[in-house]
Image (cartoon, rainbow over all chains, first blue to last red; front, side, top):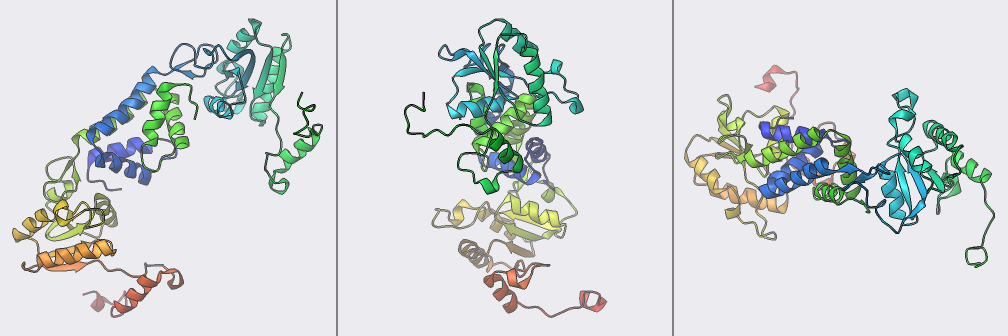
Length: 209
Length: 209
């Protein structure tokens, strides 16, 4: 594209270096900055640099954090006996969004992938074992994608936990609530039949116990 | 969304304040910055603030510019007798992309719109008249959208130019090259029949003169 301005060209390149932002969108965003006060661009830039310079990773669970411990680990109301093991930060956010989980997390920072050269030593697995060895954790919930790499990671973790007196579970997978059977993929539908559970009437108070 | 980090929240808000960027995309972009070096975020932020602080508008044509005169006005190879009048900066870029125009531009900075309270005095019309009064401009090409506001603007400009010895033209509109007639909108197709031109064989050298 012909920008007739070096400054615009550099700003467009900066935006276009972000994932999923093409040249046209980058130009639109750049011209938006031009149409606003100088102060707007300064504040925008500052929010990003401040965040990047000050952001840390929680020393316990490796979640992103503003302080040494993240807000979840620092919360005294959370169940310290229950730890949900996830691949990344976004998984933490997705589970937090549900409001259904009151335990802590452990962010692996990826999954074991020999093809990409990621072994257990590149992931936050040692620190997970150290947390388990402290003895407060009663159960690990593995919330990891059921891909080949994910299954490998879960198998590795389960073997590592075999020596410890700890329950290891994985999240339930199946046809989603409101999902039509005819549109469910075969693997999910097949597994959901194999992993069937006893039917409970939702309104039956006994069934809830 | 629950970010468990004030810094992340602020960076996400900053990205989400841009047009067309939603919360989910903003989070994706923020986490991309986190995954890169601190230096990347600094350079990204600097490209934007530098651009915004230093960018100017050409004192002749009001196009965005790094200097007093934009690269187009400063180019001695451009035809100073031909000026294309456009609404905005993006129109300049679109026309420059074609490589078909060797004249100069005049950016109005909008069009006359009584509903939005934009009158001729809010647009760069006075400076256009001053440019015309200098006498070097032979023809104005109005490349303005044929909406009600656009037509009003073109009518206003044409009347203002009536006292000057200058040709005023508008760009050709019609069914696009390669466009199927059945998919063309009625207005465009109807006007393209009214504004029909004599057929010329493209390979006929006489027809090109």
